[in-house]
Image 1 (cartoon, rainbow, N blue to C red):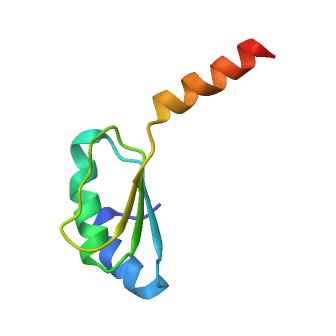
Image 2 (image 1 turned 120 degrees about the vertical axis):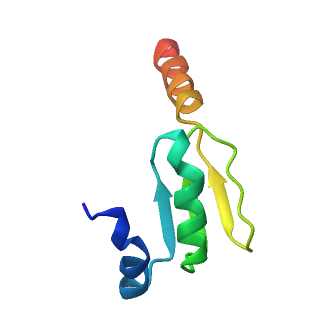
Length: 78
């Protein structure tokens, strides 16, 4: 785990292509903005917000609560 102060440098040093954002909702958009500005071309957001990006980027949302409910549904059926 690294300090968020080093986020942009870590991205530059490691040629990061996909960022997974798993922050609390109130921090997610800021983190997404930072990783996109640092040049990450794809973001998978797990935070419960409707995230946006002001640059061309692949931005996908994962609604974890819906996914858990779906799994529970299938478990009940088996």
